Length: 115
Length: 114
Image 1 (cartoon, one colour):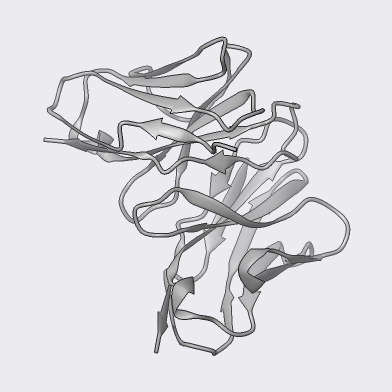
Image 2 (image 1 turned 135 degrees about the vertical axis):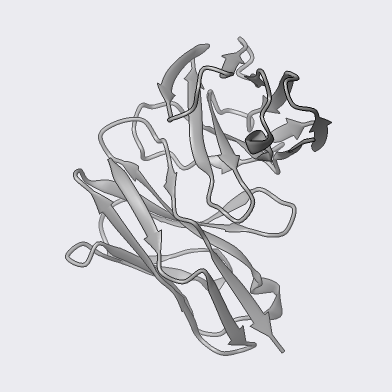
């Protein structure tokens, strides 16, 4: 039973560039959430996708966008990269029953470094 | 809105000693509570969760936590730690009335020494 998989594991970009991160959810899960974890901090919620729609969003600018595909996999896109975007980006999947009951299962993350 | 405060950024402890990692939360609605563990260069692994019912929750790796509604706390405990428990521990909440967005604390670094 494959868990949540993310790619790539590491990425180095320069300021102003654009980046796409990818996530495949745990088998049987239909909801994908993205989190940003800056060094030494707890994860911060970016947004959540269900049925190919963004249904909840945290306090992140429009430079952060996403997509969910019919197979439930997801992408996180960040435009006009800033030094402050350097972080570990975590993807989490769960069942989308619309409650907080379902725990989220996390991938190992993508480490994004901005030079 | 919800918030989580983890009262200790670092907790050093000797192997086989007991440990408590403290977590307080703030919320205007009922919440579900979670503890996650993060080993170096890895994602987060769910240790345990409180959804309803008994306030004492048992999780994996010998950890347990107690939900105290009056004190809005959810402290994590283990009676005897091992070197392998060295990791970052995160307390998190989500509201019961909507989607399962998680609000995390800043984390507690547990360092177990021989």
